[in-house]
Image (cartoon, rainbow over all chains, first blue to last red):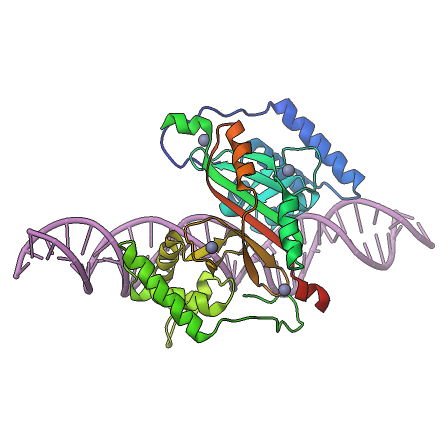
Length: 161
Length: 161
DNA sequence: AGCGCGAATGTTATATTATTACATCTCGCT
DNA sequence: AGCGAGATGTAATAATATAACATTCGCGCT
Ligand SMILES: [Zn+2]
Ligand SMILES: [Zn+2]
Ligand SMILES: [Zn+2]
Ligand SMILES: [Zn+2]
């Protein structure tokens, strides 16, 4: 999560460590139920994304991976791909960043409200996807995946300025 | 414009050179009217994007810039920023690519149908942006820019498979 | 326990995408 | 001509991501 400008951004609402532990648990369960393996590097990557409390860059994960030094890029990029396929995280294209999925029904397409000031993101359901699909159907386009990204300023940051 | 798979993609519909010339003209006019300068590197960049007839990568522009050799990256990245600000091109985040705006009313937010097979893109109006903004308004988020990207297969590519 | 297979990881190198920093030039204005 | 803002040239480097291939791990089977 980045700060585009200087002023304080103390409107974070970080989940408790307990809540994170529960999500790590749940992720393990999800993997087992899907016949996938939640290995240590996948778990560590997911943990770092949860700890970030917002969009985090691949190389920030890489840098924080080991207490003593950075991980190798493929280690983390592989884990990110896996987690994304499991629906545990989303990639935010316009930021080249990743964020933990905020819902319990994984494997969806999500929209995000991205604050350009404090870097926080809020996951929202994509409104009226049917309309996109209707529009696509007119030319026979079959939609596999939709990326919707709304950039702007969250309420807290608007009042800060 | 990339080809993700081997089969022929002969469903292009490239505009005529005349049409491209007209768009270059129009772009010049737009710049003059806005008090901006359509310089040679900006024009050359725009020309290459028009010639691509679809999403093109920054480094493909860089490579094609001069007959004799590549341009320097900042030359092209600056031109791309300018063209994007003028609304003459759009950046497609999920492809790290650029495409000429397909409409006459520049300075809008656009959606794209991106074929994962032939790489063609179709620009569409974002449906129900109001809904996104309504949703954002609930938490006081002010939307500056929305990215909507629908990935999938166009009709031609579906029948090809 | 030992074997064999496919998935996952380790390792090195490199490809791709994008920016910083600073010198120089161009153009319109006085 | 002299000035100043915007645009460009140039070199270096930062940031993001993948390729290729060797090795190890987990797991079912004997
Ligand atoms: Zn989600
Ligand atoms: Zn904010
Ligand atoms: Zn457009
Ligand atoms: Zn296609």
